[in-house]
Amino acid sequence: MPMDSGNSHSVILVTGGTGLVGYALQHVIDTEPVGSRFGRRHPDETWVFIGSKDADLRDPEQTKRLFDKYKPTHIIHLAALVGGLYRNMRYKLSFLRDNTLINDNVLHYAQETGVTKVISCLSTCVFPDKVEYPLDESKVHLGPPHESNYGYAYAKRMVDIANRAYHDEFGCNFTSAIPTNVFGPNDNFDLEDSHVIPALIHKCLQAKRNNTPFVVFGSGTPLRQFIYSYDLAKLFIWQLREYDDIEPVILSVGEDQEVSIKQVADAVVAAVGFEGEYKFDPSRADGQFRKPASNKKLLSLVGDKFEFTPFQDALRDTVRWLVEHYDTDARVGRTNARQNAS
Image (tube, rainbow, N blue to C red):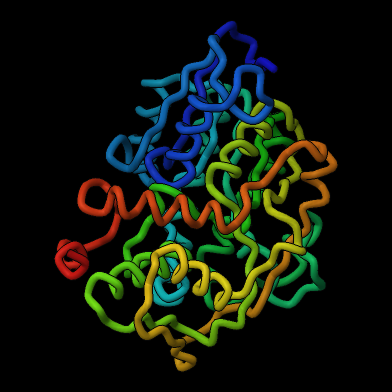
C-alpha cells in the first residue's frame, strides 16, 4: 500500500539506521515478497539509513542540515543512546539528557519541515515498575519506571508526550512503537554495554574459544519476551504504511512466549556448541523479575497471518551471524576482545 505524503515519491529516513534494527530494515525491504504488507521497498520509495557518523542528532544544527540534505517525507526514528542493565545503572543522567536532546531535535525538525509521519522507537522500560500485568499501551504513564534505568525510561516516555503535543498543536502524525527485547544479526555484542542475548552469545563464544567457564550474571530466574529484529523490522514497515494513530503500539511476541534468562543461556550454550563449565553468579543484579507485555492490540490490527520467527531459529541465526562476522564488522568492543576470542 503506497504511503500518502502528498508527493509522488516518498523519502524514508531511518535514524540510527546502521544498528540492529536498521540492519534488519535494510534486509527486509530487499527480501520480502513483492506486495507484502511487511516489507519490500516500493518503486516510489527512497530509503536513507543514517548513523552517528552522518550527524550528531544531539546538535540542532547538524540535525537541521541532515533534514535539509535528505528532505524526508517519513521517518523511522531509531537513534538513541542505549546500553545494557549495568551501563543504564551507571549513567542515568547521560541516558536522560542525550536521548532527550536527540528526540527533541528529530521531532522539532520533522514538524518544521512538514514530515508526513514519524515513528519513534520506545522500549518496555518506559512502563511503571509497579503496575498490574500484562503491560499494555494504556499503562505507560501510571507510575515511575524501574530505578535501574529511569534516565533512559523517562527520556523515551517523553516521546509519547511530545507526539501528543505535536498532534494537538500542529496536527502532526507522530507515533511510536514499543518493542520488547530485540536481538538479531548486527546486534551490539560489546560486553561493556550490550543487552542480555548478545552479551550471553559473546561471552559463551569467548568461553568456548578460550576454554574458560561460561558465567552468566544474575540468578537466571527473570523472565523476558524477545523479538527477532527481522520480525520487528517487518512490523515497523507495517506501522509506517498502515497505522495512523498517535497512540503507541507494543510490538512483541505474546505473553505466553516469555522465557527465563536461564532458558536463554541454555539455548545459547546449545547454539554455540559450548561443552565447558557453565554457571550463574547470583551476586550480580537481576533487574526487574518480569514485565510481560500484551500484543493484543498489535494482533487486532495486523491479523493472525503474521508469523513470528521461532526463538530457537532466530537465536541460531544470530549466533551464526556473529561467528561469520566476528573478525570483520561485528560490534564486539575493544580490540582485545577479538584477541581473547581468537
